[in-house]
Length: 169
Image 1 (tube, rainbow, N blue to C red):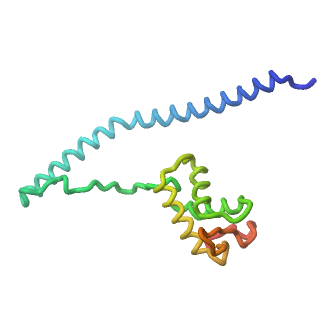
Image 2 (tube, rainbow, N blue to C red; image 1 turned 180 degrees about the vertical axis):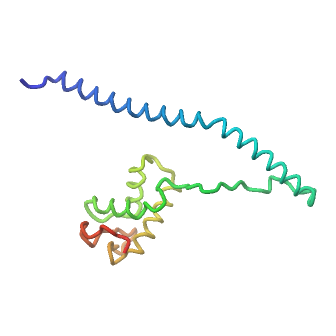
Image 3 (cartoon, helix red, strand yellow; image 1 turned 30 degrees about the vertical axis):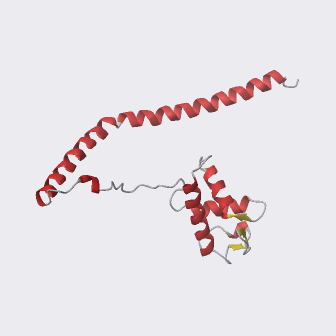
């Protein structure tokens, strides 16, 4: 006997609920990890505040008119972009592999950002990824990809996908 419409509808709804439950459990796990690290973070902030005050005291001993407002905060080891380091060129080539025809670097960048969950990226992020894609393609131009020479330039693969296993030639 065939499956009824109501059974099929309910199975789809159960599948959605199961997926949402998995997502919520992962969110809970991430939040719990952050909450567990809160005391350590507070201790470090307090220690950094003391170190900053000590360094400021030493500088003011030498230069009484010095102001901490002149110092711009520097964050070490922070990746500003949505695309992880080293993944830009492979992702761009994957986009070309799956596309129907030549694509502009902007189209490729938007698809790459969408694939990592950036649905509405800001203009700077799109331009940053677009520049990275363009640089990666220029390095591989006439080996793996070729541009049409137009404006904006449209890129396409010139070698079959099965030859691109180690595409960093």
